[in-house]
Length: 146
Image 1 (cartoon, rainbow, N blue to C red):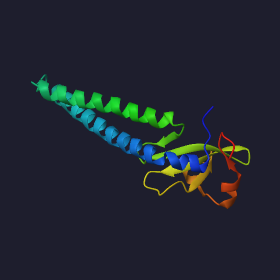
Image 2 (image 1 turned 90 degrees about the vertical axis):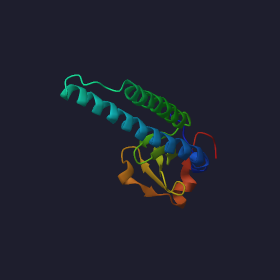
Image 3 (image 1 turned 45 degrees about the horizontal axis):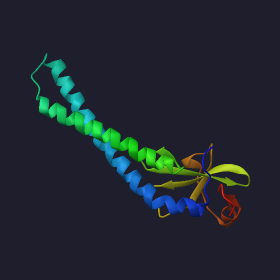
């Protein structure tokens, strides 16, 4: 079962989540760039029939790709270990499970937003985000008693 957060608990985690999320996005971009370079070299080899390649260059791209992949995996694991859910790494969308009126819903935060200001049902997604109002603040619950 996923951890359930209060709004206060989730917001307390945001600085660390934001740091790890920015790192993951950067590493994903680095991984993709290195992978594109390797694919480009592979295409040149195929088109030119075994053209000589710069082995050091290929090795450097592979190391960069593999290092980025390992760092990305570690950053994602740190975020997930906190109990929140990465919904979209490309835009930095993260959900925190909570209870509202006895139903599991998500506190929804997107990279760049100043705090958690929205929530949505588990089936609604980002498009169904609703502003957190006083009723939500009063009636939502995390795992621990408020």
